[in-house]
Image (cartoon, rainbow, N blue to C red; front, top):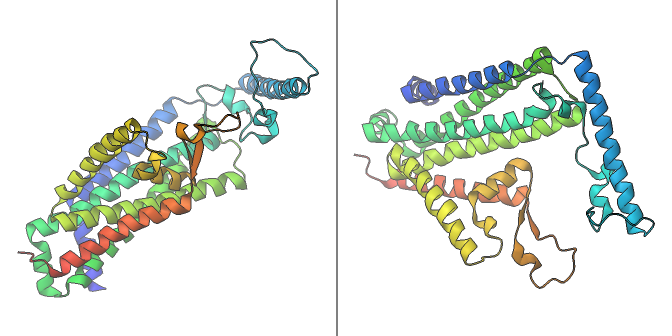
Length: 336
């Protein structure tokens, strides 16, 4: 317990960590201020106009669906310029994920129910970067300065010391992420109540938002552990930063381009960014023109699916493998 307390004090005292927290708060403040300035409380006339436009848009969707069904049955012969899908269920309003609502026709009005999820993705992205950089600098600076050696003189158990550092890091990042999430979403909820619209905040909305938030927290912890592991293997913070830059340039850009040139099938399966997106969104669909090659029918869409379960296993395997390697190397390596 004393070791964890000491590590927590060391982590909170690091200037880089303090700087990252300040940048985190500054980014949130700028986002909230920009949203507040760009929004206003809609008047009664604006709301009535938006409701009328939303109702008209829904009627147009229903009319197009009925016209598609009529053409499919041969009851109506329409203009050649009109296009309808072969399967009219694709434009059935009942099957749509989202129908037009009044908030869609209120420009300059912040609606919390519509913007909360995109804002949460922004928060998760910042926290992922925060966790990776803090995790890398936390262990990297101690290895470079000799702080780990001094700590081992007090507690001469390498695995215990490294595990305490990693556990303290993950716990601190998790608590900070939870506090930041609550403050962040509460701020925009207040903006929606006072300078915009709250929107439809039903159980489905909160469950969906909670699912994204939970998956995001898992990703933040994985990024923190990944930065910690790479910096431990490279004995320096720059090792993690260099590995991140090299992967982005060599694999995400270079290898993706090569795979497209050679027409490799399902190339997105080999990209870490694709698995991150699939995990955050609960699944993802990617287009591959090779799927429909040789197909004579019009029913082939050319998409393949990546499930969140497989993506999570990939992320866990990469992070767990590098973390295990970091512990194995740290246990045997000369630290002086």
